Image (tube, helix red, strand yellow):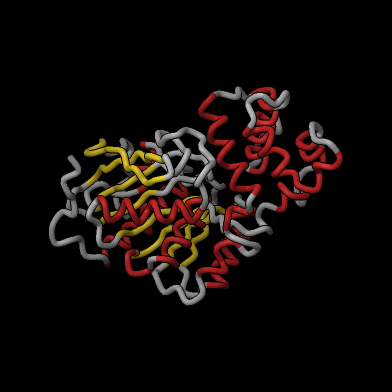
Amino acid sequence: MPPAATVPAPTRRTGPLPVGQGHVLRWWESGAPDGIPLLLLHGGPGGRSTRAQRTLADPRRFRLIQVDQRGCGASRPHGALAANTTGHLLGDLEHLRTRLGVARWAVLGPSWGAALALALAARHPHTVHALVLSGVFLGSREEYAPLLEGRGVDAGVWAGFTAPLDAAELDDVPAAYARRIADPGHPDHALAVRNWAAFDAAQCGAAFAPHLIEATPALTAGVRVEAHYARHGFFLGEQGVLDRIAGLDVPVEVVQGTGDATGAASARRLRAALPHTRLTWVEAGHSALEPPLAAAIRAALGGIADTVRPPARPGNVNLD
């Protein structure tokens, strides 16, 4: 196993990536310029890239590439929903790959990043060395049933989450919340942002405590994007990404926490759909940065680095 990285690799290069429809993404590179290209996807939808993610891979062996998805983090416009679908994100990643001169890359996908990584490999299998996934999310209706109908949710949490909604809105809770969150003028706008964030946290084991959450601009933008995707079934259909990966033969490594109930069920479904998936169980929860999960992810990536030959020369291109 490669040594644990305690300090994130410093940024070597960063820049804007205009992708059309008014969106301009922000990307970063760190690690070894002549290493194996590794795309570090962020979660969400509505998350952002962090320096801490860089500690999941050995910067001496990998050329680390990060990008904030449409509407997220340092990408602009912040919280934008127009022309923001899973299909757009996949096109953006392919644009980024060619822009940076990468022939093939490995992809690390935590949570929502797992669904995006699988969809990317299904669409462009010849550009992907391997996938390493954790906190598996597939974008299926089964996984977001808690948002749709409160299935598996503590009764008190569900009552608190749905209390601001009209009776007619209970037929489509994500849409009702998405409308409130997208409209700063709605009287329940800030409450909807806090409730959504608190409900998210409650699904990961925290107490449902919206009164402790501040609806900052950054949180509001992230929740706005997430609610938009949830309202539209993550733009993946009833079965999520499972409908897209039949016959996928890209190597898939899953590192899954036993305490992440939804992710664990999704990891089993993924392995049933792709029997060649290597599934490693770790005593941890959902976050890829939990020490046991982080160590197992580093080990999985180390195995990929042992089998994939780095590019013959740096894939960098002049972006000036």
